[in-house]
Image (cartoon, rainbow, N blue to C red):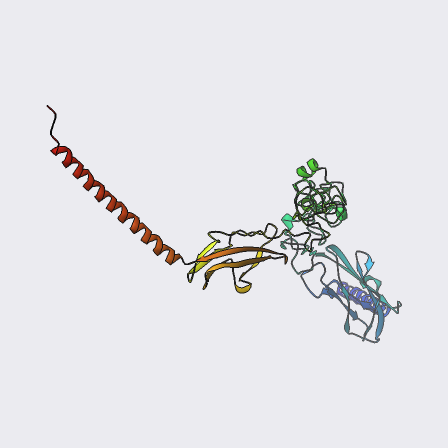
Length: 424
């Protein structure tokens, strides 16, 4: 009995001591703001580079008597995220505070530190929480992590073909020097800077003199003047200059490509027009020739132009006429100084006998004309034909009569000879 009483007394003593201790502790932390590990959360579970994330922290006021104030700080790998976040929590309540964070990819240790404004009565052991998260790499911020994105930098070149798959400004390195073409001042490493290189991606070409899209090393006519480089070497002209003598005429069109004083030879007599006194070689000096650079057309007439039959079509043909440096644009025919018609061939009926004057005037595309005059004798061909036919009949009749008379005389002679007696 005494032993039981003693045990009860001991229990009551310990219980009293526990109650006192609890009351003392409660009295010691009667201004406590706290945060637990479960009180930190994120706006998403899919952490991607370039995507804004909101970090929340729930702050609890454990005091049953006081409303408490404090400051919350968020850290990423030891660096504070944004600024201090003030908080006010009513007694026995919980309130949220948050920051927005745009993280780079990789591992991040997120820390939340609670700083109470009243440190007396606060338990410092529950003022910090930490959580580690991993942010997936998404270089182009398109919502696809790099491990599933076929074009990580979204530059239009698939990663497997992209020299720099994480750099949207680079995708090819032509010369393989480790510097992307956009940053490389000499993409093909031919010693000519890209700004001066007509073919910055071709190490075998760097110049295109005639801008025809073919590099000088492959182009057979670098200056595109119509003469090949080999021909220009033989002529002594500059294969990189379409007008070697600088007279304004392309080398291939200049009969004197090395003489700046001559660039035309109209009559092709190897004397330049500036020195030639008869540029078109028509026999008229340039000083007297209204068309010094134009060869006159040449008239060619076909068929019989000297005679014609009265009241029958006489055909005149000048279609073989030519203009050596252009073309004939008109043919004009006149008879006895009266206009008849135009065209390379014409037909005309003469109504009177005798000689008639015919004139043909042709004009070339430069306006120079050439004229040919000729005389046509108009005859009564039908009458002459009839007379000729009558003469033929008379001649034939005479021949027949002559033959008949001669045969009759020959027959009579034979008879006489037959009657004559023979000598004994």
